[in-house]
Image (cartoon, rainbow, N blue to C red; front, side):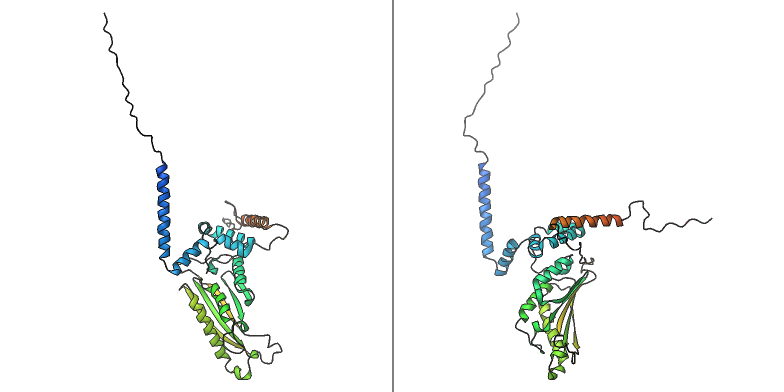
Length: 313
């Protein structure tokens, strides 16, 4: 007779305890830590100087570069500068999208002649005359009647106001050369003042030069000055030919780190008034790409290259 198999009894022990509290404590901890960080940040800010508080306030309240450009220069110039930035410095262009606008920008590093023109027009308005912009910089004249009293080097009532505007253009410059030229015309001087015309020109130059130097933020900017006296006595239009202070700002050949300077360019031609800004931008961009593609020789194409001479037997 076969032996019976022993019965195996499995006893399950169930421990009855409190339910799991879940992950709510993590949320509570996160809220507590956030509140603590905010508290200590506020306490740190209260202990800072007024300059630090102002700098932090400006950082969070100043519009981004893109917002600033759209507001001040319009869509056309902003899109042109954006295109030039993406072509020349794509990584830096993306980084600048959300950066706050620098209140003292380096105009020579803008890369766009249109933005420089817009900035000068916005800053100096009608005070600047004979404005010229090329790939390496720009220059403009400030009539003597705006800065000085007639025939003297005595600052006018608007001298400080206009010089602050000029400093807004020059303060952020880097790796640049500033040429100042003080011109006095004899037709605006009395006979007794004419012999001191050169002294007046030099005194005016010193005043403007000192103001510009005091506002510079970079030590890589060189300032040079010159004076000139133009004889307009006997000229029927001598009263209209007044003196001026010419401010010429140009890039140095290389930056302080040895890198080449980025030129001021104009990407597109005149705007098409019949199309909206964006469509006109896209059309001009496509046209420029097409021209560039036609100008560039294809691989294996000897177009534009000198043909090899045949071997003489």
